[in-house]
Amino acid sequence: MIRITIERKHDSTIKRFGVRGHAFYDDPGKDIVCAGVSAVTVGTVNSVEALTGLELKTQMKHGLLQVEVPDGLDPTTEEKTQLLLESMVVMLQSIEQSYSAYIQMQDTISK
Image (cartoon, rainbow, N blue to C red):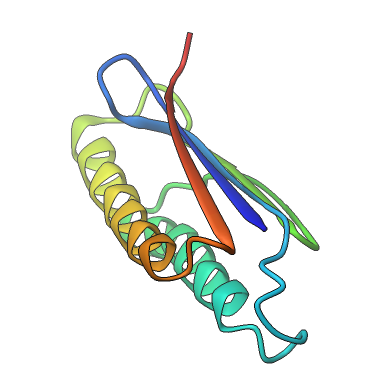
């Protein structure tokens, strides 16, 4: 199962997100759930970096993606980044609705 954690600050902005695991919906190379989640999450990181000039703190290896938004962004960069990240959440929720046996999302507020 793919487990996705969205961690938010107290103002509801996204501070970090993590994706861990594999869907096992189908054989590797044919797994549309893994491919969809990968396309959405990696595509979002690439979009944030290309469209805002912001370099996100990322760790990526087989079956793992962890991304953190740096503190202290100017308001315009913060707004654009958050819009792209919230779009990612909507896309992942759509995948979760269709393939809930293979993907689980958790949205939390940081302490």
